[in-house]
Amino acid sequence: MKNNKQRVLIFDTTLRDGEQSPGASLNHREKLEIAHQLAAMKVDIIEAGFPIASPDDFRAVKEIAGTVKGPVIAGLARCLNKDIQRCAEAVAPAKKPRIHVFLATSAIHREFKLKKAQHEIVKQAVASIKYARRFCTDVEFSPEDASRTEPDFLAQVLEAAIDAGAGTINIPDTVGYAIPSEFGDLIAYLHDEVPNIGDAIISVHCHNDLGLAVANSLIAVQNGARQIECTINGLGERAGNCSLEEVVMAMKTRSDLFSTVATGINTKMLHQASRLVSRLTGLTVQRNKAIVGANAFAHEAGVHQDGMLKERTTYEIMRPTDIGIDDTELVLGKHSGRHAFKHQLSKLGVHLDKEELENAFQQFIKLADKKKHVYDDDLLAIAQEQMSEMAEAFVIDYLHVAAGTGTVPTATVRLKKGSLVIQDAACGDGPVDAALKTIDRITEIQGQLLDFSLQAITVGKDAMGEVSVRVAFGDRTISAKSASTDIVEASARAYLSCVNRLLSDMADEKKSTRKKKAKK
Image 1 (cartoon, rainbow, N blue to C red):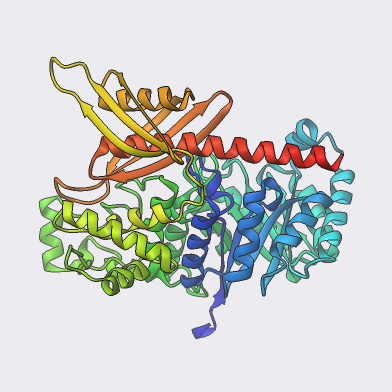
Image 2: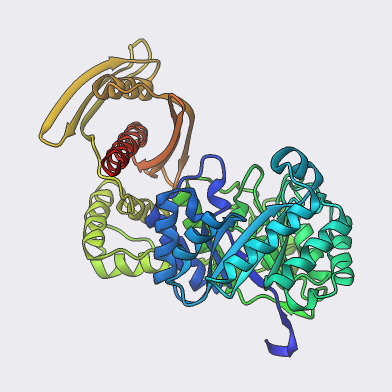
């Protein structure tokens, strides 16, 4: 690093912990797109998933390991041999693979979850790290719930873990319980009390339950941590994780307080990465979110505007261009060609194959006929449709709704299923309710709408509306999203996508059951 600054490694877990956000849903292809974006942004480590969790997670980690160049590619595993074997297989194609093992250490977890004594925890951690080292020289160990673990026992576990071969020691604030002063003291304590701590990199993984994930991560760096585990837009379990864009820009903007350290992140790609993750997960970034929110660089108060006009730094500590916000957003129209279309998708971090690109371009032309200008977020919505890997059982062929004051809302829907065409109609409390009830009648699958959100993707009266839904089918909950200039159509397509995903999952389960029976 220039000026002899120490590198603070950025470990991105958007594809693992981030995807565990309630309502987030990423398929294998979408994960791959985000991984390429993270690599372009110069993230040091990508935690691509939890390979043993599902076949799709395993597939995603393995393909990311084989195709994404630059960062270390990590997979998560419990301190169990079956997890470690599966993880090792998934990350094997990577040029720089890592196995990340974890085991709970706090008293509350030992007593109620694991039912193990302290010496058993140490023994299991050491055995698992040594086992992981058979497959991979780069092993990271996380004592889950470290911030609520007795400090002396935590130091004992870490010393044993480093002796066993863990090159990175992660200190998770798993439930977001710590406050900065005590978390900083904990990192300093471990730095002083673990005799072999110099043989490993200290990492931190902070959750945001009390809104302190970024603050805790920053004070950990000031006390010797040299890896931060974080996610784009702060996604993650419950209230989320340390936000990558916030912690990186805090260190860059306050370089006076972080003069001896720096990250290698290309901050000019932060805004682009935020938009891509938001679009693909369906989780909207709140307008007042630090760094990447829509209001982050907006100044409405008159006194602020006056100050800004006289001297930018009076009310602005960062420039929009620092995070990649370009005032000259390219707006495409119906006369734009394939080259401009492909170029703009590439700028947005989206890469489609030849067939997908042609399909997306045809959708773009249709949209451009409906509205005068097509914006970047319109393009992301179009590209997202091409990333769907699910063979659709049902496809909307025709949709008509009638609604208004003094009128009973009615929807007529025609669905195609292969060569079969089925049409029906139903009434509802509104046009969306009527359309969804009609889909239930045709598919003979009853779903319960748990969550429905609508947002305009771009500006103007002709903006595309994106609908995100979460639907319960018995004990299964499925999320999906769709966008259109017609919000009733977007609602119907998003809901039908959930139905199709349910049918696809049920078909996969039947195949798996048949295979198991055949083996017997």
